[in-house]
Image 1 (spheres, helix red, strand yellow):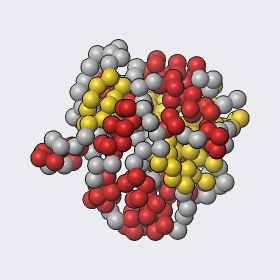
Image 2 (cartoon, rainbow, N blue to C red):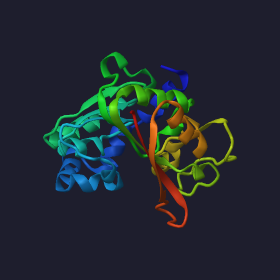
Image 3 (cartoon, rainbow, N blue to C red):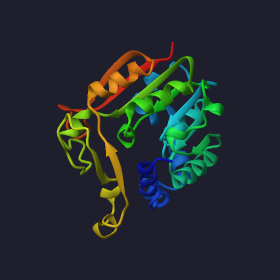
Image 4 (cartoon, rainbow, N blue to C red):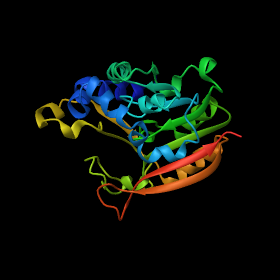
Length: 251
């Protein structure tokens, strides 16, 4: 595991299980919410899936299973790849409470076993802002390419690079030049929900934030065919960009 992944793993395993229980409810409560309307739980991402039944989905950095489990409810065969054991614990307990199965691999995304998972998935899906955890986006996209079968689709939704110059989503992270290639340290996403005394003790994450052209070019250069690029308004200010979604296919 690369050094920065070790650092990020420490951050994402800090009290994560308790955080999900506090924020989302017990596994039983979370499962009940998902069962009510799994498509709704997928939010805007539902429109990017052509179908669900028997579709093999790799959910990269799938965290607490908040999207993987609804996908499984809809009939998909879902494998979550994530760095946090505590995320896995919560996700598998929710899945059991929801009477569905998901596969959950705790690993560095860059070290996914491609002998096992190479050319295996119909869809590689990621959302919630993960690209900044990887210092080499070309390497990351090459992993995505290797996981997809021919005709497979990448659905990548992430925070808009506007975040580099303005904390528009109010994550309380440092801003920098839009064209900066610096590696920076910052709080993990949940830190702002903790009391200041605990927040100061929480491990930091190591980030590399990208420009829009770096992201799009990495998709193209890894061999994927770019099919669609959508920008979404920020939930804090609908006049500004908050997220984007890239759709690309392995032809």
